[in-house]
Length: 171
Image (cartoon, rainbow, N blue to C red; front, side, top):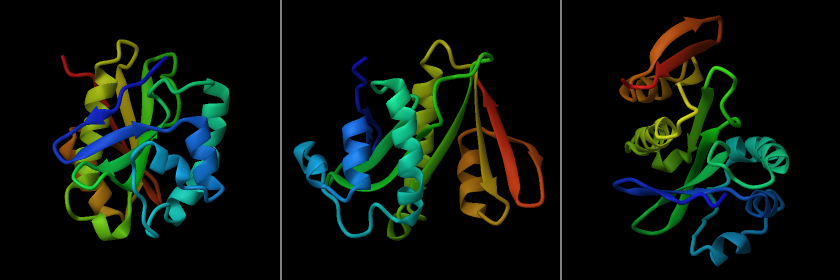
């Protein structure tokens, strides 16, 4: 399946492939340059480096990107990677998928997290098999909670550390 890039006002989301994820994890950024993307020393950050092995594992089992894996978050004006986002795999039997996103520190508080999450949620609800999107964030991460509220998510529960969220397909 050939997954197209997702375009929003200021961003382009580029699907990770196994080759890209593996090369980035090994520090070989030339694979991104071949795609016309730029990187600086800010990405991948520690959060992305922790996530890359999970991305690789999901892509190894998927064989090719379906869109329900991870995406590079790229600023359209400079084609510079500023983060990564995506889902933790294909929808479950009830049509649920879990979303996550990470924007590098110097690009936070500029609306890129919201723009990324909204673009991914909009894309997901265009997929017939998706009925709802879930997410979780640390109770202390007020910025992420605001992003999730802005894309229409409702808090479903919380525990000592986390808040859990859900939004159903619009009718």
